[in-house]
Length: 163
Image 1: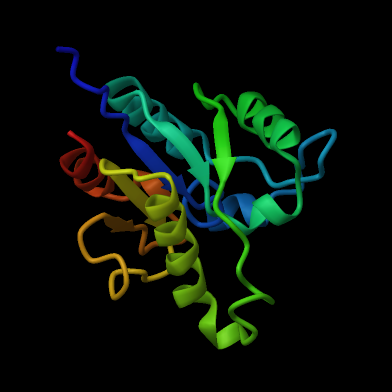
Image 2 (image 1 turned 90 degrees about the vertical axis):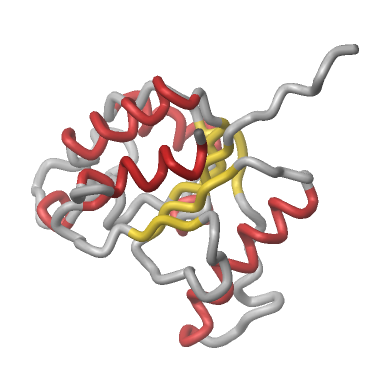
């Protein structure tokens, strides 16, 4: 009897996770898409996580509403990320949620809806917004917009959930 392969999933935000405050003020933009560059040290940390967990990356960032999957994968490649984005979470703002004060619950609901619809069991959501109220066990917050995912102990918290 063959056991099913359990995949690791990462629900990934971009701003203040991969693009830190310093990059937001950068005058150097992506040559084709005019996006801020990713912080190289944040990319290094993400690539270490990718190497250890071989995750399927699902984008939960608002960037998913601005670019198609092909463009986002080009942006990730150009910034040195060693994995592609596989899919996006659904967009519920304007459908189920209408108020900007509901952004956090909206993001959490989008992630949880994706998890439920795809019957995902091994996953982590990484975001700078505090989603802990709605995602108590599978969430890691990047609390410093200057540090993003390279912030002390964020990588270890992510690995602890996935491994």
